[in-house]
Length: 120
Image (tube, helix red, strand yellow):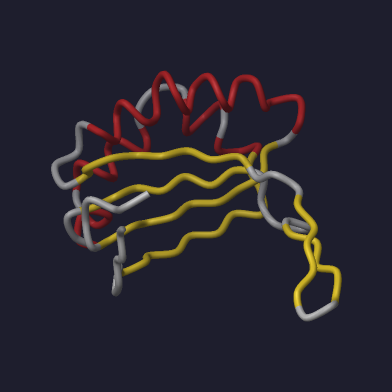
């Protein structure tokens, strides 16, 4: 999938199993719509890890072990979006901060700068 911007912020996490349905509902119905209102947020894509094993140089490799289950990619006009009042307000809006965030763990945050894009 080609990115629309040069900056992609990824957020990965696990959530307590008994909160997973609430996590998914609020992420899709509340959290993402709030963040899409923030100037400079171009798109949001959520993913769920899939287990995979393959051979690399004759050695079996298992993908995903101990890695977070969920990852969201935020395409941004600039890394400065993350320091904006709009972003800060959106991340605290609604039920998300009180009813979901306390139950998340194994969180990883990475800012990626697109350096090469090749499309056929």
